[in-house]
Image (cartoon, rainbow, N blue to C red; front, side, top):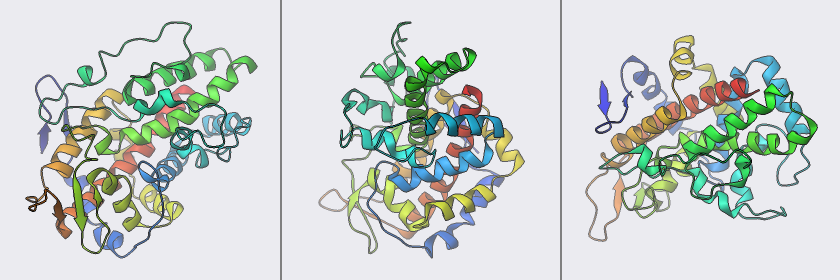
Length: 315
């Protein structure tokens, strides 16, 4: 079934034979319950995406990635692909780092209007970086799609020149941002807005779980209920990816992936919400939670495969 996402935008297939594959995960997901403090997508979600990506990267590019990260001396995280997956969220706090990168706050999402989707408008017409501007330097108002494109192009230039020593500090920054931002792009609530800051102003509650925002539930709560162990969850999801999945998911561009995430957010996160109560809060049903976790499994897998392809192409 094809889901329209608006005039002059892309279409995306979020159903068909493959979707029942993920619905089949629901009994497994619901029996594994955990809880931990987390950041956007949750640190667990970002670790899952990075671990899946490592499973599908070409050996030479994976070795180059690991070598470049190993040269980093940033104390904020350990210097391996899975540890740095949450670096860009930790960085925004400024804790333990001399540069706060406050100008990167908007790089983690794209506010595509729920009712009038226009990616170009949401990304402010994709203004190009000036030739002498490092991708890590700005601009502040860039969307997640633009930053993925900018960091990818920057790394491709460094690859052509052999990753010269003078280029490596920026190359490491680009890699750390890319590993995180490709994950963010596949969190559906990072690609939609209904004048509610991507679902952050929608109050929801599911069963015995503490109340929170719709955004937080999709970022963190549902993933915590899928499996509290990111390595185990990544292994389980990675094992389900077929050669046909790889061929399908490796196609496209960050702009197309953004519209897929938008379509998923609209059809799976917003449209199925039950009527609100008298306070404007939403009591999520088990059916809603089950469908959300099935879609999150798919999003994590797609993110991992596409991160692997993005890094292979850059390195």
